[in-house]
Length: 397
Image 1: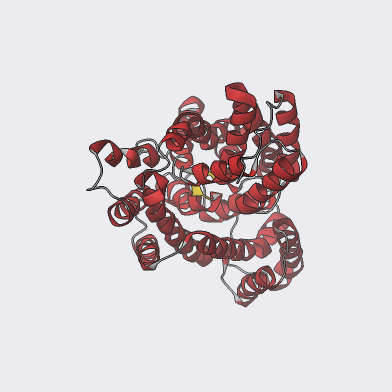
Image 2: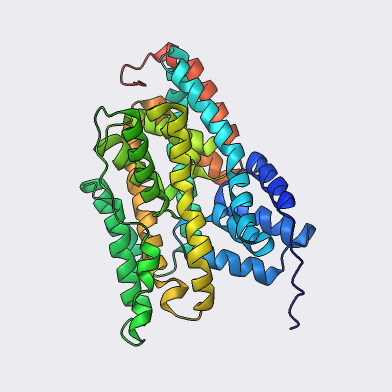
């Protein structure tokens, strides 16, 4: 079949304009965002060939980092060069940052009011349903054989039972994937070093406690650099990682506040990992939101611009094609489910919240309801029922 003609270079200002609009209006998670880019850039604007789009998706799926953002950076790179990648990528992120930082400011200002507690009484169980539904979609995309399900089950048990460091679970499952699916013992030694490109930055220990603002910003940056390096395919992958680090290890957020942060990431346009912006605002104000946003997204830029060309060059290598990622992806499914169980203990505490969670699941599976609409409806339910039931177990700091 004749190869499609490669489109010409796209001006950086056009890339910026497109991604500002996508970042402002793009809802539905990574699959929907990537689908929208493919429909508009290949079909309507003719900026890409189908082959270029498929290659970009395949390469970005083989890297840690939020998929939609990385595909956007990839497209900006091949059509706008190095500076086009930086401009297009941050243009994609900017509308989300402004929206979520504003929500963080409103939450900090009004967080102690009873109506805020009432809203999240209704919204929190819906968030659990959103996580479970998205996890189901991820299993349909990537789970293919018995080993992946076994790794997912092991990651689930570890997350629920001992709340082990999620990064170690990812790495261990990735190594199992290389050993089982790859050709580690049948290729030259250079191929065996491939997984090290995918593991991300070294593990960092971040402590809690009262610290100066500058030191806290440094801790936020280190924490989110680590989180951004361990997000395979969907922003939901970092939910268990963030829950452990923010609510258990550092004590920066209560578990209820963490659920609020996840909800903010899910109802805003763009990638779910924009949750980091909200967390940063709660921990250290506006500059905390800036630092957290840079930390969560910077690894995506570096990986696409440095590692992706290497993966394209060696894409026929079996280990590079995704053996490590298959194991890590399975671990992601298990840890997301485990985190759902742990968070459900905080979000669901009576018959109404159980009914909201179950009803939200039914609505998500039966009808194509957007995240903002579901959250809005359950927020209204919370506002109406909270003063009537007055549940003593609900606490929002």
